[in-house]
Amino acid sequence: MLIHLARHGETAGNGRCYVGRQDLPLTAIGEAQAEGVARALAGRRIGQIWASPLQRAVQTAAPLAQATGLPLRTDPRLMEIDFGILEGRPKGKQSLSLRKAHATTPIDGGESLAQVTERVMDFWRDLPPIADGEVVIVGHYWVNRMLFGRIGDGRDYRPVTGSVVSFTPIWAENLL
Image (cartoon, rainbow, N blue to C red):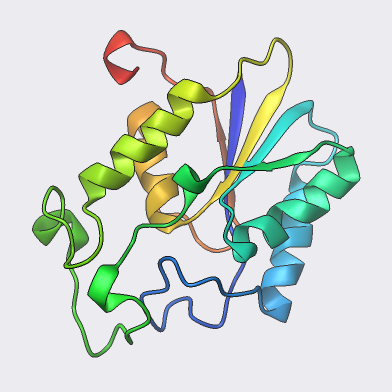
């Protein structure tokens, strides 16, 4: 099975604030990036398309779903990390080191990276089997990093908006 892991297109908050669970729409650039994701995956043997239910992920996956005629399925386990009390705050005013300070300790009112990893791996375990074809998952920065970190091919993955990484998952007992 080949996985195409896409990060949603640009929103007005990307790079400026801790967006997290805010349900922001794509900007015009983000809409163009969504079209670019669809073009990048054109002609592939896509069998399933999954996305976070946040509108920026749904809007990014929609052109691909339309082009393939496949249903776009959403799952709340693909939502971005819950930044808790930092949600919506400008990044310049509040420094945050998730991998150091919140690897296992949740952000006040939010989640830890371990919790994000647990829920995204729960999604992965529940992913319906696909006999022939490829799976597209449209998520967010931290969700995609955590999923790729567990099932990816070892590359250092730091997803930019509107990007796609394609890989064959590493299958190991301890991952499931």
